[in-house]
Image 1: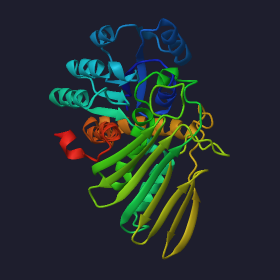
Image 2: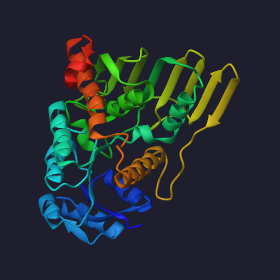
Image 3: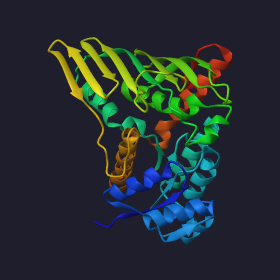
Length: 344
């Protein structure tokens, strides 16, 4: 089987994880990289043995020779790069957050649809093994019909040390972290019809919000709470675990700290360790996220070969992105926001 050839744009903080994961993905290989920073370009190129290196994405696309592009840049460049990929009819993966605005995201999806190319958003949190275990239990009917949930990520981890730009944006935790947690809520309990959000800035050294609490009304009838914080100081730091609570008509599911999955139903109580693997290139505590990077990229490789739609396609991610926009709108207005109107 000939490997799919990929190109990576953006050689920053998180892209190194993607490069390691591409080395492990069956059926794909990165053949070219691009970054405007020559030091980062050289560092990643040398580390992973990539000879084709570009400072200009347009030149890289003009030279061609690859089957897909992985866009691992910051959000400001996403629309231009996705539209460049569409213009060259190159399937694209785009890092989250998908776009600066929902209208930009819609335009990106439309451009790729017109070009008849796949577009996937690198929304990897739903691919974490513990989240997959929760979904599998729910799909197996372990607790009947879910009617309530909580998706929680509360931490005091210094995320700014590795990504200092996060402290400079007017928007922070919902856009950077909450987007993952909202996507998990959608993945587990289905699409959302309305939400109400409250935000708070505890850390005086940052510009955006570092705490958010969001109430979701799901289309299927369940209610859930998404709560995220980078201002929570706990005795045992849970970063980067997402904790899940689900109540159903026939039982409960609890994914608690330490990757402990507890299911209670008429058959009794079962407790399972759903810890992620520590891949050869991964490091604790990041290994949960790192394994999910491999999982989503393997998923992309398989779907690109069989022509199926990816789990986090651009079209699907519009529904998650709409929740982010709605959360900021609700926090500013103090009122609930209907999601359907945003997606028209």
